[in-house]
Image (cartoon, rainbow over all chains, first blue to last red; front, top):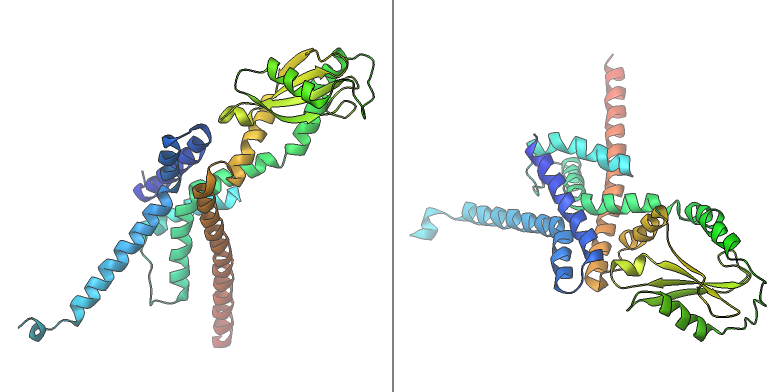
Amino acid sequence: MNWPLMRITLLALVSILGIGGMLLADGIWDWLFLGLAALPLLLGAAMLLVRRLKASIRDWCDTQTVADWE
Amino acid sequence: MLVSLLSGLVVYAPHARRVAFGALRKGRGPRLLQLDLHNFIGAVVLGWALVVTLTGFLLGFGTLATGMWAQGELARVQAVHGGAPVDARRPPIDVDAVHRAALSAAPEGWHVTSIIWPGTDYSTGRHYTVLVGGSGLDERLVRVVLVDAETGAIPGTAQLPWYLKAITLSEPLHFGDYGGLPLKLLWTACTWLTLFITGNGAWLWWDRRRQRLRRLVSAEELA
């Protein structure tokens, strides 16, 4: 089984579960299902942020010289 | 839309083997960046887009299904519960009494969502048709209560057929109007992202076509 494809399909299914669950649920459950519905978006945004952060740390490291640390 | 989503999922697999989820190849030309954005956003909104596509497909049959129901099951109810018609402009029983009568025939805690006057396509010459709904899911899955416009009696109640239930449930799932502001914000974000990947998908197709043509022209010039 293709893992990236499975991961995306699972994310889509979780989102569908959240969207459907919100229609059925009330109260605190609403927030849980909203979280599930928005999970792919949140995960995507988190991945973008992490990659951007990693890249900026790498860039910063590239600008450092031995002299900077002496 | 469904075809584009499923075909997108199929072509996503080889792309995902080469490019990690969330990685955008910047500085290597606009085409690669747009391709990564297209695949990344497409993967993120896939679940939402599938729900909106399938419910939109069902909603497309709304008028047809309502017509089928009106000509089939409703027509049977109208035939069974006939009686001398009343003056539809001034029915003997007023709307407050109809409201009370309909609620007395509905489960406790339910409320009236619509009252249809006698003498329309969805009522009889003698009866009001009242739609009642509960809370949560029951609010969407309304029941039909007939109220005699002369006596206030309830000759019958009916549930919607399965296909109308499916279409009725499709409406909130399509428009996202059932979960307050947070769900509306999610719907807005997904709508804009889908709009973006539609546009950038068209650009990717046009750009590939342009590149092919350019290669063809240069190959002809070399020959």
